[in-house]
Length: 100
Image (cartoon, rainbow, N blue to C red; front, side, top):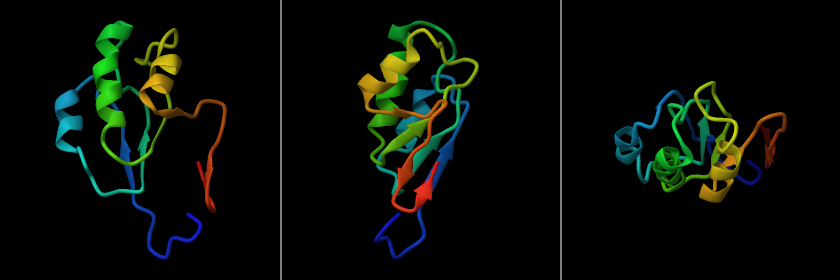
């Protein structure tokens, strides 16, 4: 990223399928960005998906996320936005000199 004089630290995660225990273990991790690559959820409903989305958002670093086949397309875009996650699907993001 612009102005960063050290390697960019990115945590890449995928396929947690609502496993909040794993997200809880990673709370406060020292990284510049979290890239979540699909299947945060395991189908289900908005109510069952909300705790995992909030846990991911609370990890500390900004989160970019793309949906997987188990992330319900009817509600996850709105749910993730409400939780503070930035969904990249058919779009991109530029952070300083780094593109996603």
